Length: 243
Ligand code: BTN
Image (cartoon, rainbow, N blue to C red; front, top):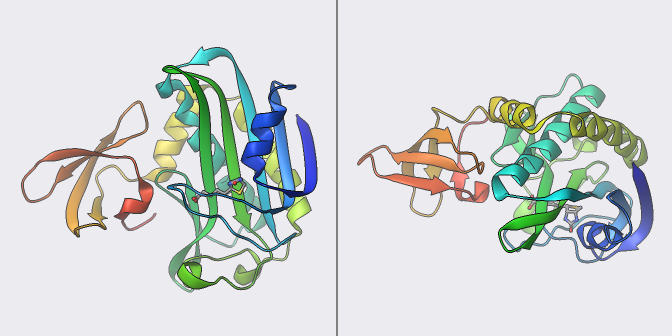
């Protein structure tokens, strides 16, 4: 896998997209992002050289339908979870729908990694996919809205250099790239373990039962009070018990 590391970039996702003009597959990492972004138009901030900021760009040999690229969010978080478990075998990590990784600290689950998957579409077909991964490694403090919600490996008592973690992540990603889509989708659903669970819709505190996950990786939910059905695609809109 071609891997390019930079001191500073705007966003590794943007750089990976740019590099796909020359390569079919590329991993871009950086010490610092000036314009790191998260899902739902949120900013993804982090101190220089203290965390992992990386993006895997994949140019599809043949343009892909949405349901075929939805597995990439699973690939990203499965690879991160497995890598973290290898580096910190005594810690507990969970995937929160769709592709966050949480770690347990003092009995509470906190976010340690976020994955941002972006696709380049021509009409309904995806030409390329970028899997952007941010992992909290050495940062020891989080501010404002992240204060009680984020955790790093250092805060869990795990001493690892971002560079070493990135190398471990790279080899786990390579392993998952050899898996077929069905296997990744099944592993992701198993790790999510959300089907049959009750979730709370943050916006109005309504309670929903997760019925199933469809081929596009959307949650199909049933209202506990009136059996009304709805699709849930935004993980930040729900709260539920992980694990
Ligand atoms: C989220 O949880 O909202 C997703 C966060 C994704 C952050 C990573 S850091 C590397 C890559 N580049 C970006 O600009 N974002 C992703």
